[in-house]
Length: 168
Image 1 (cartoon, rainbow, N blue to C red):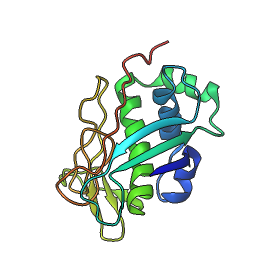
Image 2: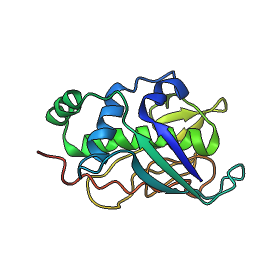
Image 3: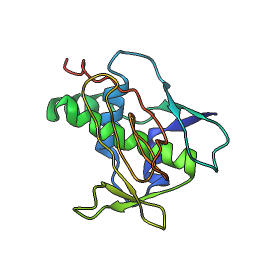
Image 4: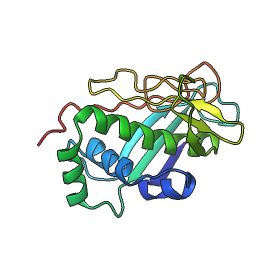
């Protein structure tokens, strides 16, 4: 299933979180190879009964993201931090489009997760790596080797971010 998604939608679909830096970091990471938008990411979706397909193709538009803001963000954060922030934004898009869930809050320290998702407060762990196709997330909410996790112990999605060339 292919979905056209705008990064600025994150503040609407997950209104309880702040997204400005995460959105700009996503543009920095996905735009690092000077590929023109929309940025395309194919996510493998597994173990999610409500999702009829085994793939989610996100075509991500970076509308309303200032190139100057992205440049300042690149000068402020290390590449690994930008990847982690981009992974959170991609997780937000994937969770919404695949499972129609909202990231609602930060998880309690010691819960082995970063965020609470949906009304039931499912746990979501999102992490980023700055090397190749390494694992970008682990979770009891469902994803690994990528950007997000929702649901079962099996992965929900894989997001192949390769941010090794961020410095300019």
